[in-house]
Image (cartoon, rainbow, N blue to C red; front, side, top):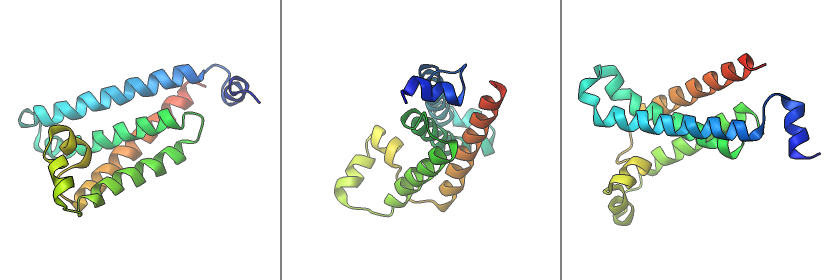
Length: 143
């Protein structure tokens, strides 16, 4: 079965290209909001300032997983996103000089983080579950 027919079987009104564009736009929006929450954190309410950046990072990872697994289930994207985010967080327990030098760069700090915090696992989970819920609701409304 061709990918076009496969997608039509799932939802004839929706194309893979449309999904890819929407997930890419959501990924960019999450990235910009997350960077904004770091940049202007002092202007935000304390709760938002402390938690939004990590939750939005996890939302961005979920959108990236949906880009990779566009024809697969939301549940698969959730599991891969959780594994990826948790792996990055637990990798912060490893403190070799070479990886710490990467973490000391702006991009390295954004991608790899700096130090393990268990609360980040909660933030990642909340971000991924929220993104998946929005995804599921949006898909329902399109039917």
